Image 1 (cartoon, chains in turn green, orange):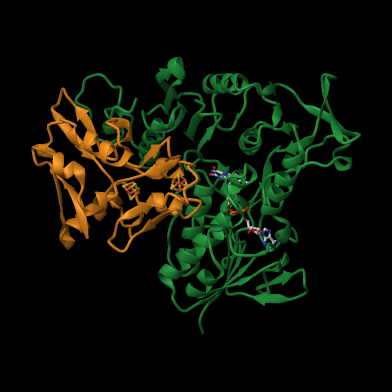
Image 2: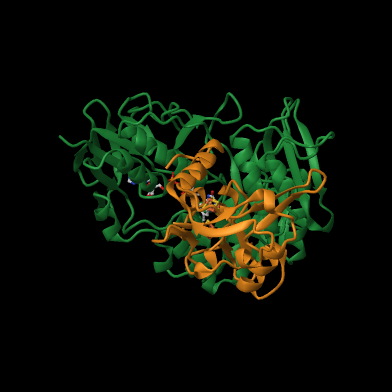
Length: 417
Length: 154
Ligand SMILES: Cc1cc2nc3c(=O)[nH]c(=O)nc-3n(C[C@H](O)[C@H](O)[C@H](O)COP(=O)(O)OP(=O)(O)OC[C@H]3O[C@@H](n4cnc5c(N)ncnc54)[C@H](O)[C@@H]3O)c2cc1C
Ligand code: SF4
Ligand code: SF4
C-alpha cells in the first residue's frame, strides 16, 4: 500500500517537504492540511503587499493545480487541534480525523503578545499571516502616524512598509540598538543613525507600558512616563514556535518540537521542520530555532526525504539574514557577536557607510559575519555563508600569502566596492 | 545544455568581460553590475573568472521565497524579474558569489547567456571564456565540484 504522508502547514517547510518526499517516493499519497484558505503565499512578501507594491495575487507561490501535479491534495481552512501519536491520526477542528503513516508538523511560528496594559482594548496589528497584512494595510490607508512596538526583524519590515506609505513613525525598542538579533553593536549604531536620518523617531532602551484609546487615536505610554498619540499601533515583539497541536504531549516539546538529526521527533513517524522545530545547532552543542525562511526550506526538504525512507542528515541550524531597510543592505551569518576565544577580522569599520566584520573561532574557522552597506556586499556574504557551512578556515587576511585557494579568499579579491 | 566554460589559465584579468556584460544588460560600463566577475590574485598571477554555473540543484532557486528563480528548458537558472521582490536571499545562498543585484531595477540577476550569444565570451580576447555544449562529462565535473563545496547532490 502506498505510504500516507500528512503535512500540517502550507508554507516553506511543508512545501519543500513535498519535494523531498517526491524525490524518493512517487507513489505515496500526500495530504497538506492548512488552517488558512487558498494555495500557499509567501510570508516574506507580505510587507510588499502592505506597502502597496504587490497585489494579493502576486503573493501566491503556488496555484491550486500545482498540488495535484505533485500528487498532493490540499485541505484548506482546517485547524489541526491535536495529534494522536499512538493511533497515528490528526484531529481537525471540524471533528474529522486524518490517518497518517508519516506526519510532518510544519506549523511555523505564532506571534508573542507582549504584556502591555490596555493592549486588548485598542486596535493593534501584528505582521505574520496574510490576514494580519490585510488588516495592517487597511489601517495604514487611514493613518498618518504609527508606533511600531519592537525594532526587530518583523518590526523593521513593518516600519519600512509603513514608511513607504508616508506614515510618520515612532519605533520603540527594548535593546540599545535596532535589529539586535541581526546586528552587533557597531553595525547597530550605524543602522540606528541611518533610520533616524530618515526622520523616524526611534526610542531605544525603551518599553511600552500601556496603550489607551483617545478618541480615534491611540495614546502610547512608555515605561519612563513619556506619552504620545498615534493613529495606529503595530506590535512586533517576537514569535515563538506554534506548538498548540502537540500540547497534549504527542511529541516532546522543549522550546520547539525536539527533533534529531533526521528531523524526527521522539515518535519515529512524526517529523517537524521549519520555525516549529528545535534542531541541533550548526556551530555549537546547543539546540536552536532560527525562525527564518532558508532553514525552513532546508529542514523541510530533508524531513520530506527522510519521511520517504532516505537517511539525510541535517547538519544543524545556522542563522542567516539579509534585508534592505531604509536604503541600507544588512546581512548576518552565524555567530556574528564574538564569544570567548573568538577572533574578529574587521574588514571595514563603518566609514563611508560600509561595515564588514568576520568572526573566526580559536581554530581560525569561520563562524560568523555581519555586513552593512550597499547591495554589492550581499554576494560576498553568500560566499562566506558557504565557507561557514564547509567549516573553512578564514584565509583572506593571513600574512604569508599565497593563501590556500578557497572561494572565501577568492571573494576577498573580487573588487565589489 | 550550453554553458560558459572557463579556462582559468588563459585569463589575464583584462576585465573586458565585466564591461561587456554590464553594458549589454545595463547600458552602462560598471563592473559592479556585471554578472561575471574576475577574482584577481595579482601577486600569485592567478585570475579566476567567476560566473553562474547554473547549478544542478541550485541553492539560489531553492531559497527564493517567491519562486522567482526557475530553471528554463535550455537548462539555465533564471531570475524572473516580475516575481522578484529584491529580498537578496539568493545572494546569500549562492556559494560562488555570482548572483548579483541591480539597485535600479530592484531585482537579482545572474548570467542569462545573453539570449544565446554571451557578450563576455565575444569580448574575451585571450579566449578564457567559451560558450559551448558541455558534454555530459564536463557537466558532471561541475556537479561534483558543486557537491565538493557542500551543495546538495542533484
Ligand atoms: C512579514 C515577514 C517577513 C519575513 N521575512 C523574512 C526574510 O526576509 N527572511 C527570512 O529568512 N525569513 C523571513 N520571515 C520568516 C519566514 O517567513 C519564516 O521563517 C518561514 O515562513 C517559516 O516557514 P514554516 O513553514 O516553518 O512556517 P510558517 O511559514 O509560519 O507556516 C506555518 C503553516 O502552518 C499552518 N498552521 C499552523 N498551525 C496550524 C494548525 N494547527 N493546523 C493547520 N495548519 C496550521 C499555517 O497556516 C501555515 O501555513 C518573514 C516572516 C514574516 C511574517
Ligand atoms: S547558486 Fe549561484 S552559481 Fe548556482 S545557479 Fe544560483 S546563481 Fe548560479
Ligand atoms: S532577490 Fe529576488 S530572486 Fe533573489 S531570492 Fe529574493 S525574490 Fe528570489
